[in-house]
Image (cartoon, rainbow, N blue to C red; front, side, top):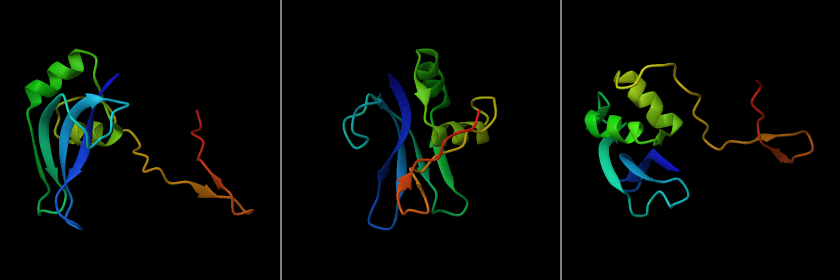
Length: 106
């Protein structure tokens, strides 16, 4: 499965991100099939630059966007639809101190 996702670049405590197209099971910092954009959340206003035509062509070929990338594309009006909740891998702690993943209610 091919996915469009963010990969972090930049110095320590100064993150910026690339929008890359790669296999879902590959390492996010590994080789990418295509670099389609750039995102800098630290600049005022936030800098988002991407090639909308290449993103649309990858989506037409069957690629999916990660929730964070999907939300950026919805803000930029490249794709239509509602925003997706972006999970950051956080887990809830139970009373016993055990980590338990949040369950999504349907």
